[in-house]
Image 1 (cartoon, protein in one colour):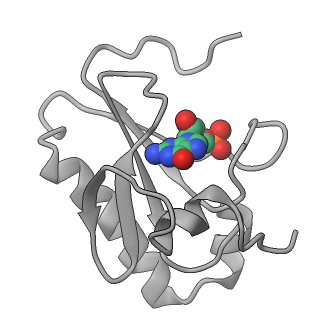
Image 2 (tube, rainbow, N blue to C red; image 1 turned 90 degrees about the horizontal axis):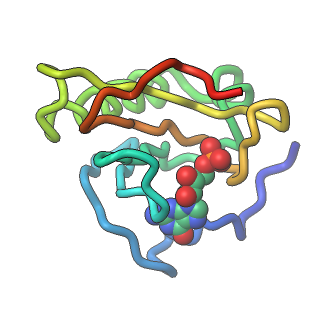
Length: 119
Ligand code: 5GP
């Protein structure tokens, strides 16, 4: 699947639409989800143009992969989530109901999150 330059996260990365920034470094940007599903719901996206985990895991450089995963961990750490824990979700493709075609990890926390999947 070709990368869509006009997806909403590409627009956030270009500063064309605002976000509530939580963390940023050379490789990644983290910001609050606009429709939070938990008391803490943050999205972490790589700065490179990757549609999904399927794309990123094949096409990204070792530096981008390392930098992105460090940024996911650092985002959670900066929010103080390590003591009580958090959940990471990366929806990929149609079975997983991925809505935005730019790789993103959801960080969910702030309460007991219950079973992993709803039916
Ligand atoms: P997906 O279903 O693709 O895994 O998740 C996409 C997420 O992006 C959803 O949780 C949705 O609320 C969030 N989202 C969609 N548009 C925007 C936006 O313009 N700003 C922010 N901050 N989040 C968005």
